[in-house]
Image 1 (cartoon, protein in one colour):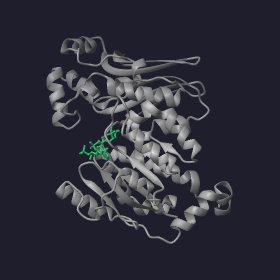
Image 2: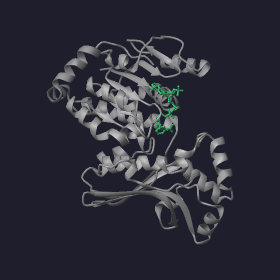
Image 3: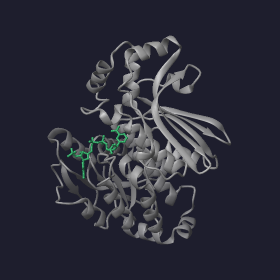
Image 4: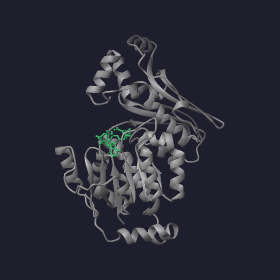
Length: 371
Ligand SMILES: NC(=O)c1ccc[n+]([C@@H]2O[C@H](COP(=O)([O-])OP(=O)(O)OC[C@H]3O[C@@H](n4cnc5c(N)ncnc54)[C@H](OP(=O)(O)O)[C@@H]3O)[C@@H](O)[C@H]2O)c1
């Protein structure tokens, strides 16, 4: 059984995923009986490459590192061509987020799902804007849509709340959802001004040249929209979130908060009452007895209030190519396990998923994987 995977967007996340896959190839085969081929990659500036029998990832990554673009296996191929090649089981999409429209990620995901291809994305724009529509298309076509990397990068969040906490009703979530702003606030606690802390974050690669999406709270807000719609069954958009960023926080505010034994953090709060979910993002004073108090630097965290378990807390990396690549890997493995769990005997798999199993064995039964 070999999964044919295509990647759209070969930047930090696309390459992070490719590296994790490559490094873990043997481990994944041994532990999960997971085998794969990356058959095609399409990127706006690097070009597009395709090889039916699988691309040699080590060589592809080396060439991108050295030349900044693809060199071998070049093909003039659009994302549509890649999806419709008939040679794809999973599309991994990691192109930049457009918070206003969700495009062109929406379009790529729609085409994949409509063509019976599972889709994994790290794109917040399309999931915040179009989750319901995309989920319907996925269900209609019997494929899965996964997006763990959109919130908290590789630190479990979406799948944690949907799968591990299944059966718990989640009534409230408080989260530090943006590592850049958390880093800036942590640096301000050490005496830097907002401008100095922002500059330091940019030097370290934590903040973009145009940091507005982070510091104005929009990045945290769009992740909060995803949590509200996916975890709390709301139907809201970015415009429904009350958002205040950290630009107006002064060194004096930070100093006063510290003197009172508090820290200022950019907090996203989601509260569910009946069918309504209220969401806001704003700087808040966090006291020492709050679990979010000690989440410093670029870390992210979620404090999840549930009926069956009380409070559940998770913290970890909230950004990074490899970290978000891990989120993609966990989604890809979830798709694999959904159909081909080692715990299921082949005859049970065939009974549960007859058409898919049959096609899968016919298509991939005798091929080799490359990495
Ligand atoms: N990096 C993280 O830590 C992180 C964490 C969680 C989620 N995410 C999300 O993951 C996605 C990817 O992030 P990233 O950090 O990998 O971004 P990135 O480094 O900027 O890489 C994106 C790549 O996609 C290419 N691209 C742009 N538009 C495209 C299109 N229409 N078709 C094909 N390729 C296209 C870009 O090419 P150009 O060079 O021409 O622009 C670039 O090579 C974003 O939506 C981001 O919000 C990132």
